[in-house]
Structures are given as structure tokens and as C-alpha cells.
Length: 438
Image (cartoon, rainbow, N blue to C red; front, side, top):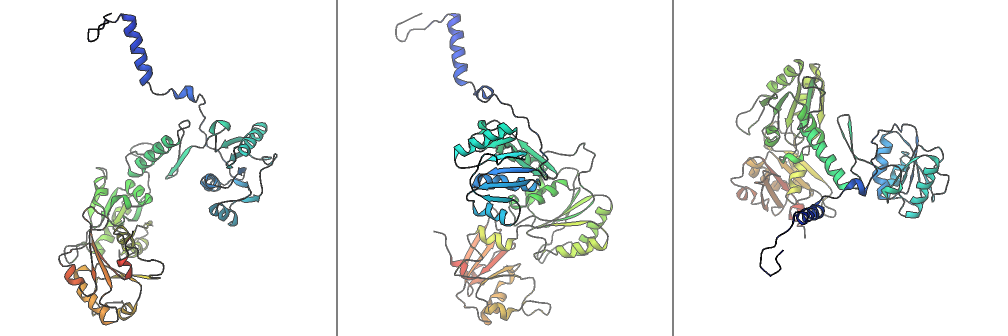
């Protein structure tokens, strides 16, 4: 072996092997089986009518109690004090709360126990009693001190998913969330075989939210992944349509303002025809189906035809779009009311059902949908009936999307300020528009 600085260093075979071994040891992932040799047995417990004792009523207990209650357990809560959320469960009669500290013997007749006290000594005592009584016990402050661990769980269409990964709760939660997302988006098909239908024939009216595909509800996305046929509005998030399988029939049911549109009668007929043919049909609508979306008309048509129909509410643009633009529709000390009005017809139109004089006297927030192309008419009506011309106004186009645009002005100059803005757009009128987050 050379020793002069800069000269080649020659290693013998055993020295090379030793260096390789040291390198692998330094870069090896931790041997979790040695760190945590216990391999839990994942099992589903039927706790219906069976006593479960929970010691402690803090934030940890508050996270565990809802699922125990949903499982039908007879929950006995023992704690000298509780968080407001946990106390509300006791007040509602969902569990029995004994307002005191834990004492030995509290686990008598228990099938399962959770030690969630903020005092480690109390949790240790609970775990010790559980060991003596052969009652499985989860110890919140020290997973190794109990005889059971709580899995990261989630539900999807009748499936209960549980994930355990030793003492790595973040990994459990990440895997659980990924699995649920894959199921909800249809990336993972949970049918027992490819030909077995997972949804009975019928119609689901699904509100897809204001535009951002992430703002559809969990249930809405789940049903969309089940669809055989989708009738989509123009304002339904296009990204969601791109995720549909090749087997799904997509029908364009768009209604372009003052342009091409599928007649409502034709939409109703398509829903009924496909459902009667044994298909599951999703009517995908922007916003919420019941907020100027003619959703109830479609429900009535399905019911009259004897077609099963369900409604999945959506995040309405009337509230969410202003929120994303930094405008709350209500704020303490500023407004105690907000009104949502359709701008589909003008104030002088004989079919208008809107009391514009009352809106002019309104001091709260006014949200106008489908109004941007006639905003001058609506602004004039509001001013005529008492709204100050200097009332703050915001016009928000393509709300929640990457090209969202917000124009702030007043009622007097809104027509000029919003010139060139095309639907979809929302107009917010009221003092809340002037609010700014620090």
C-alpha cells in the first residue's frame, strides 16, 4: 500500500470487502423489524353494544371517539375535564362521561380500552389493568406500552381501509390517503371483477363545484368514477372529464349563454333513457345542482319516470368564488345577510320574480350570478332603489381557476370597469368587497 500523499493506494481483497460492507451499513435503510419487532395482527372488531373505556378527554380522545361511536360501541369516558367537542358528544348522549380521574377497576366488563390521558402515569396504570384483565388496550402516548395500536383508517363505498406501519403514523396516513384517493378517482377499481357492476342503474345529480377540480366533493368524485354515462355542463371541470374511462359515454349538455344549448327536455330524456337501459348516469353540473342549476327539474323528471335519482350537493360558486378572491360574503360588524340572485332576466322583464326595490334597500351582501353581460341594467336598478353609487363591487371571472380575474370598482362604474369580461363571472356587491386581509 502506498503511503506518500497523492500516490496510488492499493487495497487487498479483504480490505475492499470490508470497505464495501461499511459503505452498505452506513447507507442501509433502518431495519425496522429490529427496531420494532412486533408485527400487529390487523383485525376488525365488532364493538356493537360492547363496552369500550376511554380514559382522557383531550384532543387525542376527540379523534378516536367518533369512530367508536359510529361502530356502535357503548363508550364509557373517564376524565376530570374534556374539550368542548368531547363534552358535546356526552351532552348529546353519544357516550357516558364520568367526570373524575381514573381508578383501578374502571376496565371491569370492558372489551377494549384507550388510554388517552395527558399523564403518562395514568396511561401506564390503565395499560397495566388492561393486561391483567386481558383487555386489548391502546396507549396513546406510548404505542409499545399497550397491547393494540390504532390503524390509520378511511372509508370508501362500504370499504373500511386500515393501514399500520409500526410507529410511523405519517407513513400510515400517507398510504391510507393515497389508497382512498385512488379508489375515489377510479384509478383503483374495487369491483370483484371487471364485468360486475358496482353501482345500480339510476341517476346521480352531482355538483362539481366552482371550477377547480379539487373542489368537487368526495362523494361526487366517487360517483363520477362509477359512471357509465356522464351528461356534463359547460361549467363542469374539464379535468374531471379527462379522468373518465374509455368505456364511459360522455354527452355534452352545455348551455352557452346566449348561444348553443341542449334543451332541458332533451337532457331529461337522456337521463331517463340511459338509466332505463341499465346504466348509471351522472349529471355533472357546475357549482351546486340546486343553485340556479335546474337540478330539481331533473329530479322531478326522473321521479315521474320511475328512475332512481340521488343528489350530491356541490360547493356553490356564489360563496366559494368570492372566498377564493379574498372576499367573505359575511363579516361580523359589516353584514348579517347575503342574498344570491340570478341575472338570467332583467328587472323589467315580465318573467322576473326578483324584488329589486327590496334589494336596493338591502344593506348586506348581494351576489349576482349570470349577470355580467347585463350588469349596467342591474347596477342602475340597485342605485334607483336606494343603493349608494359608491357601494364597493367586485367582478370575478373564471373563479378558482388559473386565469381567475378580479376587478374591484363601485356600483356607479361597474359597467365600464367590467367591460370585456365574459361569463362565467360573479358579481359581489356590498361593503365586504372593501375588506382586505392584513
